[in-house]
Image (cartoon, rainbow, N blue to C red):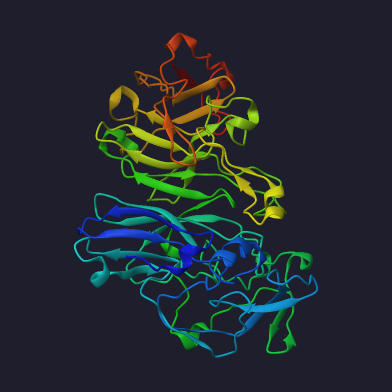
Length: 454
């Protein structure tokens, strides 16, 4: 199938997987940061003037319009107003109806691979940008989604990103609810006035505070259920793809492992002063607790620590192979370059041939240590730093420590999809630096004593 309008924006089609019912499922991102096409979407508007957010069911708008300079003209003083779910430069009115489309964004779509056009339908919607999803053995579907940025005509200062339990037919709140499924009318989601475009309903100027762009009652939309949140990630950590641990992972079997790609500040959030993401986290479905599992000893990508190729850069995908090992696709270097915006391009660059695939195996190739009830006795964590990368495992009185294999660089892929043998992939083990960076085995996160196993 083709013709997904939202995919002409910065949020494309992403994960595609075969479901337990034999259908193919695909993640379809929603256009624009928060359903209003603005200056931050200029390169996409120039290429596809009709680009806009679409809805999976008929909705009714509140008629909010956001005033910005009109980049399509040569006069820098020209302004234009744009509403939600319409192309750039199009105003909306209160009560205006937006009809649903089959190939909608902000959704997970499903179809029979034998008849995509005839069977394509929305499975769930109202996600800003789902990038990955996976099922557990019981058939439950989990999906990770990127939350709002502080950019564009309708910037939102969210306080989390999320991985969700996905229920068929459910609406997850975008573009009027946060990652934690709370209404954006809560003042804590507002940005400074200097970052907010003037908002009009008709010709009446509104206060500079976030309001709903959808009339939920008129649209037949109930507030999303917060219990659908499986776990919350750090804001701007960019959770991407995920998988569910199989039985060889013992007490962690059934836990959801999610890659966090990392931020693109200041373009995505000029208010940010931390470096969230750049790691793989583990979510316990029973508690919703999110714990780091693969991460650099210092926040941020390895390339910014003079350790390119020796630490995690931007983990993008996590999959468990038939051998029981975890494989992590490392996207490679991605950095902000504001000069590109002056050339009418997105302000990011992605050097080719900087990615990798890492392999992590559980201790003894099987179950990790666990308490009597089968839960993990303590977290394992892959710690990455300028001294190399190693799997660490908690030390237990009276237990034999498990064997852990160093993550191995299997391949190298660049942003353009070209591959080459990894320069570090076949180094003798003796060439790896030691893992003494682990502070003599002390876990700085939990205080437990750890042994670094090489």
